[in-house]
Image (cartoon, rainbow, N blue to C red; front, side):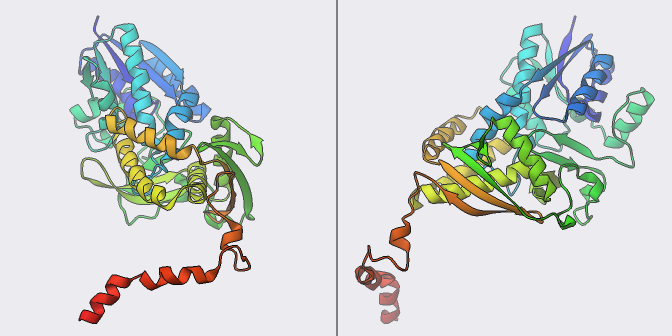
Length: 390
C-alpha cells in the first residue's frame, strides 16, 4: 500500500491536498501531521476534526516548548529579522518538517507532501528538510499549478469545510511568534489593509494609556516578566496579549522572497517586537563596541539562513556558537514602554554592564577632562593633512 505523509495545517491548501493526493497521485493511504507551534486552540481543534474526516490516519504533535527553546530563543539571541520581518513563519517551518519526517519514518511512508505553492518560500523551507531523506517529495499546489480560486471551488464541490471564501480569501499562518496574512487584495501593495485582517493587535489609534513592562534576561533568553519568573511559552503568550492591546507589532512590508519575487506581506507580532527591541537594547549595555559591530553582521547572516530555512547549513551551527558566547553576558532587566503601536526601551540594568555612571557623569572628577586633549589632537589627523596638501 502506497503511503504519503502530509504536513497538515488545517487550512485550505493542505485540506485540498488530501483528496488530490488520492485522485491525482494514486496514493492509497494519506497520513496527516499537524504540529502545534502555538496556533490558537480552536484552529488546532478544527484542523484535527477536519483531518480525521479527510485523511486515513492523523497525528497531532505538541511542539510548543521545543519551538520556543530550540528556535525562538536562538532567534532572539540573533536579533532575528529579515528586512524587518521577525521570521515567525520561517523559523517554524523546519521544525514542522522535521516532525513530519519523523512520522513518515515511523509509518514506513513512500513519500512526503506539503501544501506550498511554487511562488513562495515555504516550499524551500520544507524541502530543505524533506530532501535529507530518500522519500519522494510531492507538492500538489505547485505540481498542478493551482490557483487559490480553483482551490476554493474544488473545496466547495467536494464538500470540504474550509475557513476561506472568495470575499475573504486571506491566507493566514499563525504560531506563537507571529501571525501572517496575505492574499486577495493584499497582493496590491497600494491597497490599505482593512482592520478585519488583524486579530492580535488593536489599531494603534485606539487610545489605550501607555504601559511599562519589565523583561528579565539570562544569557540572552527572556526569563521573567514584571519580576515574575516565567517559562518561554507563557511569557511570549502574555506579551502577545499585552502588546496587542497597545497595537504593538504590526508590519506591512514589501519583502524579497528567496526566488527573487517581491511580495507584499502583513504580519502581527507583539511579543516578538517587544522582546527583540529589549534584547538588542540590553546588548548595547553589556557588549563592547567591537562585539556589537561584528555581531550585527552575524545577526544578518543568521537571519538570512533562517529565512531560507537552511537550519542544517553548517554555518548556521557555527553562528549559533558565536551567538551563545556573546549572549552569555546578556543578563539583566529592560523596561519597555508600550503605547500607540510603539515599543520603546526606557530603562535597563545589568550586573555585566560596560557602563560607568561615575566616569560618564558631567559632575564626576574620576577622570580628568584634560587627559582627552592628546587624543583630540590626533583625531582626524590624516584628513587635516590632506586638506593642507590641497
